[in-house]
Image (cartoon, rainbow, N blue to C red; front, side, top):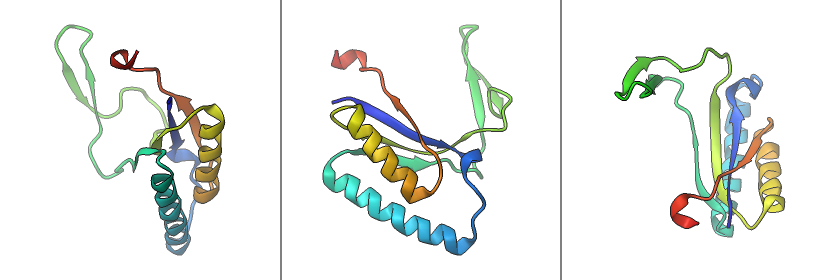
Length: 118
């Protein structure tokens, strides 16, 4: 079955009170449990804004590490889920459920089939 990345940009998340975030977290935890029970959840996670960000460029043949993001942008990944579902329709279903639970937009992308699975 194809795997899909369902992700949101941190800039898409509106401001919330601590109480609103706790309520959303409870709804999202329940949805994650449902996704696990359905056997579609591969992995989910969020980005730690407090952790260092670095980039690596090996175009010269040697990895060169630089502090900070690679591209100049105000947008960055906020969180994501990887699901293993039958088709795009199922990916849309779960993405819609995640968007409702979180209360902000989600973007869906299908992963290419890995070379070792072709």
